[in-house]
Image (tube, rainbow, N blue to C red; front, side):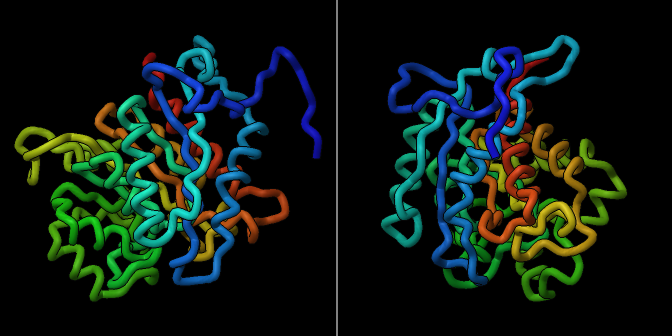
Length: 304
């Protein structure tokens, strides 16, 4: 459907190319269409393009007051997509591209693709801490969209600098819960989020993952990667996520968590994962939520 044009109502997206831009930028957008190792059949490789299209349905304006246009307040660039990001060679390409972007950008936003991209994106950004917004632990053996957190720990990421928010009942096994505990991971369940509220939960997560003075595992760098697995949301708002279940987070809860995380400068990279644009509802609600997560990440970078 063609979108209307109004010169006084700009649309989000359509940012200039990273490769044609010089100097530092506030945020870089990168498509990482990983899908080949997914535990369930997925068309997640189609999602980066779908999210870019969906961005045009939204304005880049924060109401305030005062009203702020993200495109005017931030220098945002689009770095295109990593070609064939799956497998060892593909992951190496992702790491290299993310490292290149991170050297010039305050925040790298990777649009997936399945959750396997978290491994290579976090490593490319040299993250020393990890926050996941996910119903699942992602601590499985092997290489898949169910294993990125375990792979990061295996490669040296301190489990005490990992916080997993939204872990849900009936979506995990006792064995992986015990594995998380053994790694020293802080688990904040879906029920905990509801009981405590999004702001309190994210504050704790940033203190732990960001290596605040005196926090466990505070040695080393402070860079944090944020993994936004949209299947943490209720299936009514995320039907395009194969593993989303009834009773997950509301869309506003996810958006609040994302903006709060991005408002901390220690968060240097983020990914948006597990949205399959080819199985979304007819109204595209899951892809639109993913696009709003991009905007919430950018909104977090705007200083009042």
